[in-house]
Image (cartoon, rainbow, N blue to C red; front, side, top):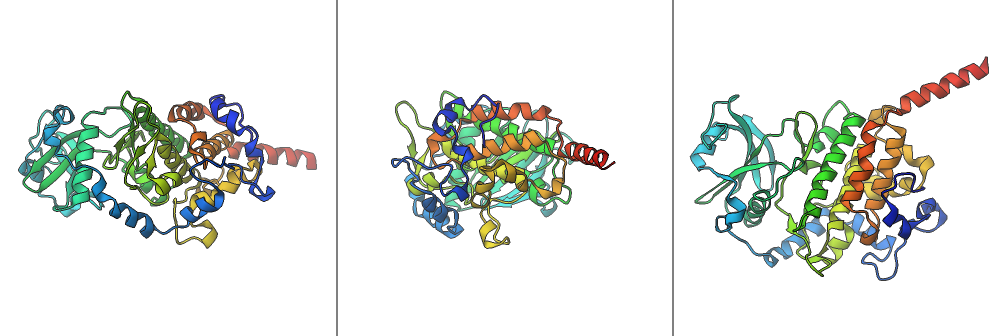
Length: 402
């Protein structure tokens, strides 16, 4: 695969010039690494890709005590812009946390739909005021409290169009709740994998770009933040399909000064976590870039990062897709078949390029999120639909027959 005319991969290209022309069948990996790399070879990565969920989870649990648990009420800078709700206010806002108001469920507990007054914490009648999502933490959940604190700490300070807005919180006795803006279209995961109608190509590009802008903002600030749990279920969509990153429970302050990485407990979601991070605990912004590569593969293919229902050679998306990414002729076999021919030919090629470099086995060869934003931005305006190209070729063949 040539680098093409994107222009924003120049730094990457210097290290990988011509590498995409190699295929797996040629006997060498297109991302062969120097000996001092964290991930030494394809076999090591394959062992990681084929590992079980249980292995990653066990490693996470073994390291739970490494990081400090704080109380957000002692961090004035984190809470000064947030509303503080009483438990009774949120109970009333959600209709006593009634089951039919549940928006979702996770290891932390449930998320409920509720309504509050526009300029305060008072509950409002359903359908009036401001619609919100209320996350309720299960009592006595040590890991959940840690993540609750991280949410308040980061989202209390970070504000960007592609980050979900945290409106406020409740800390009362053993109750821990968070109040967010309501995202009307739910998660990207639902749209890709659980809806009967396929998500249109144009919407997929818009969502990928919005999510990339969110990560670029986190990485590019004066105090960089590593998201650490980038996946389709954490990308929420508003009515206009604008993407916003949610769930900052695993976010971590990035390295500062001369530090190259943050050493931390290994947490995240199997199938999305960068191999070198899982193996070493060394966390960098390039760990998020790898996760972005997995998500953009899911957007391209309509396949989950891990799907045990598929044949053995196709259960891990990265392992299955990598050979296709390095051969342009086979590239279109990756495209979600539910799209039929309703996708941009050049768009697919560029998205595959982004995925290829994000998933590089050498973290240093992965692009920055700023570079990814530059490459994805022009893809919104492409109108070279595969269906039009197919009809044009069919018409030309028909004329030749006559």
